[in-house]
Image (cartoon, rainbow, N blue to C red; front, side):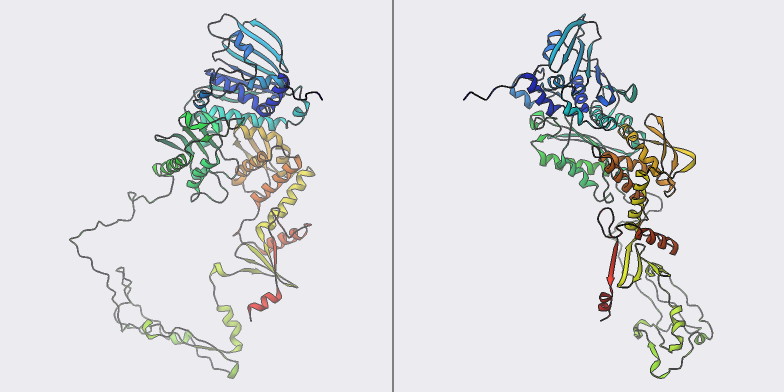
Amino acid sequence: MSDIIHLLSDAVANQIAAGEVIQRPASVIKELVENAVDAKATKIQVQVKDAGRTLIQVIDNGCGMSATDARMAFERHATSKITKSADLFALQTMGFRGEALASIAAIAQVELRTRRAEDELGTEVHISGSTIEMTEPVSCPTGSNFQIKNIFFNVPARRKFLKSNQTELSNIIQEFERIALVNTDVSFILKQNDTEVFNLPASGLRQRIVNTFGKSLNQQLLPVDVETSVVKITGFIGKPESARKKNPLQYFFVNGRYMRHPYFHKAVTQCYEPLLGNGEMPNYFLYLTVDPSAIDVNIHPTKTEIKFEDEVVIYQILLAAVKEAFGKFSAVPSIDFDMEGAVDIPVFNQDVSIEPPKVTFNADYNPFTSSGGGIAPNTGFGNNYPSSPSPKNWQSVYPEKEPIGQESRVFKSAIEEEDDEEYNDSFLISASNEQEIQNSIEFEEDTVPNYVGGLMQLNGKYIATSVASGLMLIDQHRAHTLVSFIENLEKITSQQTSSQRVLFPEVIEFTASEAAFIPEIIEELYHLGFDLSDLGGNSFSINGIPGDIKRSKVKDTLINLVHTAQEKIGEPQDEIQKQLALSFAESTAIPYGKILTQEEMQSLVDRLFACATPNYAPDGKKIIVVIENNEIDKKFN
């Protein structure tokens, strides 16, 4: 039997490596832009066409490469970053393994033009599917110009599984933002189909954050700056009021490299727990600087997961740094004792004797006499209330009722103690006066159920009505959520629309990633009632809104819908439509605590029971609960 084990060819090995390193066009941009940063570039321009399917071009003004380096850079494991194994524990650059260019060349058509400052001519290299097609001198500016064409042209299965252009562009923007946020001294430009998406000049960190995510974030940032022997932490955290329920801006960087770290994320969110509502998540941009030998960045192919040597110590330092930022910039509500009208706290003086307060009262005081004599009991705070004459003929207010044998009922006060000096007459009330007494009973407003006709509202949460088997309770918020969800989904699938035109259109500003995703769901938003016009620069005009939404909630609802769709990237279109319909229903559903009229309750109940499955909300929670008659009877045994 012949031997069956053999070495893979370089082309196959590179394609296998590309499966780990190059997952989509965004991966290509990440590798090329990081290489440009390592080349000390101060200006980096990225251009993509068809979200990177047709073309990805990265132009930088870095150090460039010689003719030999330009050819060698596409070999597997060829790198200028490390020379020995010890260098892995002192990394100061973004890339180091030498797999990126070889992997890109294995699944795309690559054209490179590069020149060093000291060379008169540069070098042009053409590679297709790991095969070098041309290498020749060329006149070009200092730096490097990579053109990646027809990604996955020789791996049709991989190309087939790329998502829509808007989804792939959203991933490109995400990778671009991560690199731009940490390299603030570099100017970045990103263009999609010749349309400028980002133009970020070199600036400080706060300005880079504002330029990337919008001006509204500027007033919501609290600086963090802590330095210890273990770690240096700088950056910004968001004020509690800027928290989001979806797609929060959460970024960790270590030694200039983006990372995901659930353990450190928990340290930050723990500080926000007493300040945020249920489901809200804070924004943060935190930069950690540690000794390179104390971390391992080589545990994941994309280098976004990093292992720390002193994780527990850094956790505690991070916890303290965030709390210090809250206290230093008064992000947590507190009492200001210097403000006008604040409580005057006396200073303790040992020379002054302290006497307990005295209570004075007139034991002869009688409120039912015109001359009670004296004063009412002292409250203990220095306020004496003089007695006022009692009205004449006060006895006529409480006429005596003649008892009628066994039909009478006695309502008598349980408090008859003389020490309390409370006088309560007993009332003898005949059955003929029962309705009169019931009409005179008064309850506190909060304890009275809103009962009208056959429907009754309890605690501003439930609608109650009697049924043959007992008492039925309906959760008004969940019921309206289900009804709205079904109606909204019907509008989207049947392509109906019901929009209310606004007299003065509002302008809403999205982040670049949000704006890039809106064309993906623009039709669904239109059928829900939102009429948007693109104004450019990530801004949209709101020309029409749904009729059942408050004007003040329009912008928040739109942003929430975009975030909902972004979370469902890669899922079938019908699933995205369901999530949009549900998200909009939850945003506009009747809130708990709203008092409903009889007509509103009747309309909601009718619409609920018109649904095929009225018992459960879209999230699986109960809408209807029936308390059986025998359970009610047990309460009276």
